[in-house]
Image 1: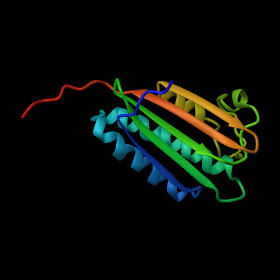
Image 2: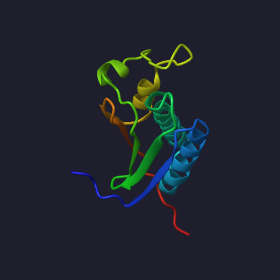
Image 3: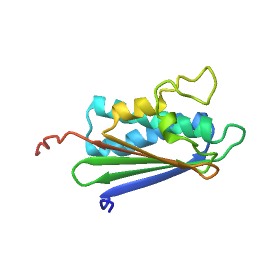
Length: 149
């Protein structure tokens, strides 16, 4: 059962590479209300960049489709981020999660899932060929002392 979100936002945009920076910045701005450290914020931005770039490059290699990013602030200072597409899907998720594996040509490193996994506490990938992919990430942020005025 999902945690009840204390706040959430959903973004939807075309799978153009120029929108990757927008998604990264929008998620960082939304997460800022949790008072993350600079390191936590950089981890979040890096993971979002990788997930959105994967959707743009791999889900819609020959067309423009929709990318959906949902961000939820959950109890326990947990940030949940889901990046979804309705593109071509991943035939073998285990293979796709292996470091250095890519279907994006030689200019791609094949490290996207590995990077997401290293910067987030939990990474779940669901996909169906021809139907799309959903990448769900969770990160528990450090509790920070709130100072009174």
